[in-house]
Length: 493
Image (cartoon, rainbow, N blue to C red):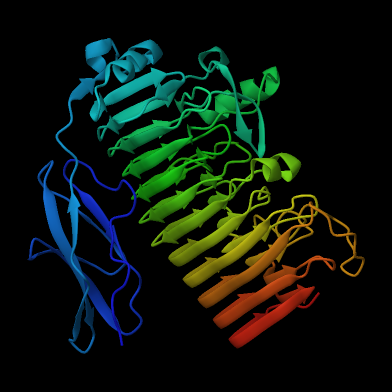
């Protein structure tokens, strides 16, 4: 029986005038999905998400979605109730002395607006270019950047105090990010939104050069939110971070809807940034995450799911889990990665209905010896990749359009030489790929290599059409299933 399941509002995905909905894909010949609010048709979608806008603030609505099949049959979901946020008190940063001339440093004025913001209030950034150093958000607030508004990061390192937080899996000194949460020991924040059609530019090319030269800490991020429950990032454009762009550490209940991230170069392609480690969005020991209807053009991994590194990561032991990535477009970089810092574990991740355009890989799952931890219950489904770029080629850092690699970062290795199993031995199991069409000019179509002492377990490919420079390489796997799989190799090695 065909039915619609899991029709819901993802975590925190409400504003004063909108509510976002997601649901599971209906198998069959679907023409479109129609979303009804209070019994009336509000709009339609080809995808499994819909944002109902133009609603009244502080009001509860009843909603359901219908799947319309090509034969005209209609399937209706259950009804749910959801409410918009109450009307927020506005704290315009210009009322606190901010000047949008692109020259005046506005750090203190913006922070004053944040500190003054009432419970459920909105810190408002109007049109203009507002130069700023590190600012620190608090619970129960929205940072709203108006269309035409820009938060531009200062390129002076003294505007970013040194803090201790996680980078590349280890808690260590870092330059503060442009947008942060300031955490007291043992404190958790809640209900933080970053919204609006404006932009955040971390000025990362200049700032990175100075941070690396000074060596006082690891590089900043554009946005780094830590220890926070209920986060909504909606509509915003974020770009040019000194390192990873949007970094979520020890967070729960996150929705990311209709955002754009640029870490490789300008939006119009006019200039490359000259940044390295330019990941787009990194959930790090973070749970219950929905990323949908978004675009990432990355210099490195588009999305990288992490949970700490080696002994420290295992000791902290906070996994990244229950993550759904759907209806997203990726335009450069390395697709959706898991690891290599994954020592706290990664589980229950679904990537579906996404398009990869001149992106090196759809999936990269990386867990070398020493990490420990388990990656399990991961699926990639209903995905297309076309990569005609030869900017990147198979190497120790990346090995194929779809790859699972337990010898990540190693130039030379022996797939037959086992080592003793210990707490640093990683486990990768229950990984599936379904309904995937890929063509790549960069290298291997599919590459799978487990450890001889810890083989990959239960790896399934179903309905796959893959064309690569090279074909399919696999070793050290227990339980490999190939169901309706076609692999074409353009060249032989």
